[in-house]
Image 1 (cartoon, rainbow, N blue to C red):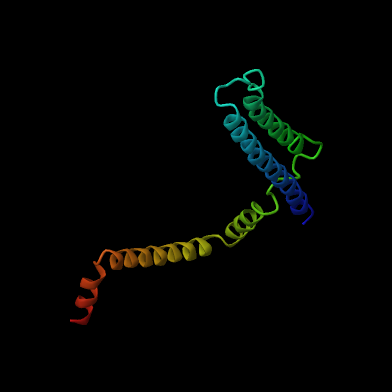
Image 2 (image 1 turned 90 degrees about the vertical axis):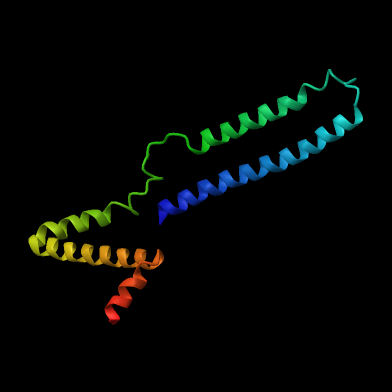
Length: 138
C-alpha cells in the first residue's frame, strides 16, 4: 500500500503540473490573440519574439518537472509493479510441478472445453450453429 501511495502522490504532482501548464497555455493564447489583434501591421516586431519563446519555455519547464519527479533514486523499485504481478505465476508453477501428470491432464481437458465453447460461439456468430441444431433435432 505504501508503494501505491507513493505512486499516487507522484501522479498527483504530475497532474497538477499539467493542469498549471494548461492554464498558462490558455492565458498565453489569449495574450497572443490580443497582441495580434492590436498589431495587425506587425509594428511591434521587436516584442513579437516572446510569443514563440513562451512555448519553448513551457515545454522546457514541463521537461524539467518530469526530470525532477522521475529522478533516479536509491530505491529504484519504488514504482515497480512487483507486488501486482509475478507472485501468481510462481504459485502456479509450484502447484504444477508438485502434482505432476494429474494437473496436466486436468489442464488439457479444460483447454479442450474452452476450445469447444469458443468454436460453438463462433459458429453461432456466423450462423453455422443453426445447421447443427437442426441436425440434432432430426
